[in-house]
Amino acid sequence: MTDKERNKIIAEAFGLCWHEWEATQFPHCKCKHCGEVIIGIEEDGTEHDFSTWPGFGIIMEKGWKREWWLIFWEWLYTTTAIDDLWFLKLINPPIMFAELSTWLSENEK
Image 1 (cartoon, rainbow, N blue to C red):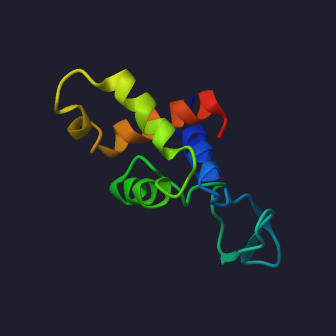
Image 2 (image 1 turned 120 degrees about the vertical axis):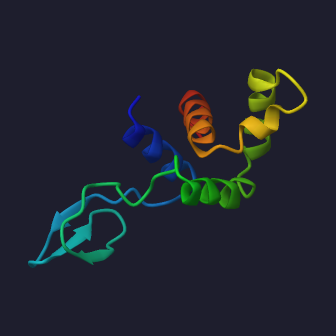
């Protein structure tokens, strides 16, 4: 799975728009899904990168509001708990990004 696919899975699980831009009147582009308009040209979905610290913040901010969040953490504990400090390893954006996107793709949340 590519990082772009992983980002899309997480964005959609949190109810964020995965922008797909279409050219309107130059120099504007409009998202096919939410109607947001921007100036310039952007690659689809580039506004979300959950493998970074800002992205990690979004995961932690929005995650606890989801019905499946505790189920994800239970799964995470059972798959990663090797010692008493297992949770410290998860305070790492690329690791959380990979684990969450894997779990979401397997559980289709």
